[in-house]
Image (cartoon, rainbow, N blue to C red; front, side, top):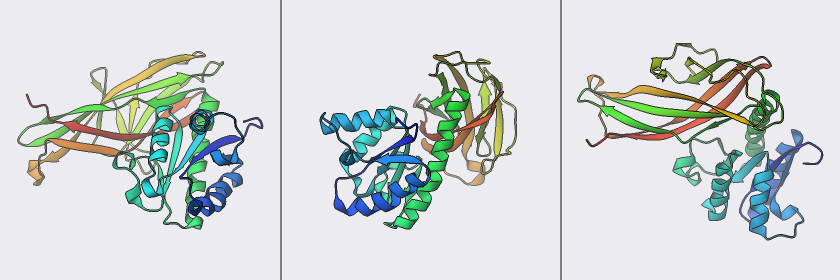
Length: 283
């Protein structure tokens, strides 16, 4: 925006019952953090409303979406925002209104409490500001491509294999900070493999994650308007008959992980939501 404030575009149903949640929950939380939060009905514009909404999503630094009542327009707009790689914070009165395939994304359950919404949203906005500052300081934007995987199953155990492709993008006009190390933080029992070799790992120094894995960086620096990719495979035993666990033909793996770039300008953490289904190959 013109005054260099971060801009949060708010998606919610056009219903007066959400006005107080917006004015005293969302807008107040944003204002306290010097973030400009707006809905489309507060703006003056000449184009059609749908065109305006899509353009504001593209311009926004952060997208905040009220998912209560499962409004189809809001769902579609959230999908558009995710497709554009926007930082999205989802908000809802009840957990059931968050679609199953979005439950691993950052979301707030406020139970129609304005106080709870404001407090939790403040925490989420602090996180979002940190993510944006990472990109601005390091000149590196991190994006996780859609995950793929498969299931290796015997009569004794089921092992999930997940393929990661993480894009490192420099959309700025400056060379990025020098990358000195790359760490991947995740839960216990995962093994990471890069270029056919197992990646070194140790106990995490970053709660709540349990393990830290060392990855090789494809480049030392990213020149302006350039791109590189970190690729690796993660493997984990998902069930074992020795432990009396049922061996299924399909498993859904979801949760959160963090990619940390240690650079000449400091370290920068990028949260990566994990959601993938691994299936047994039928032949």
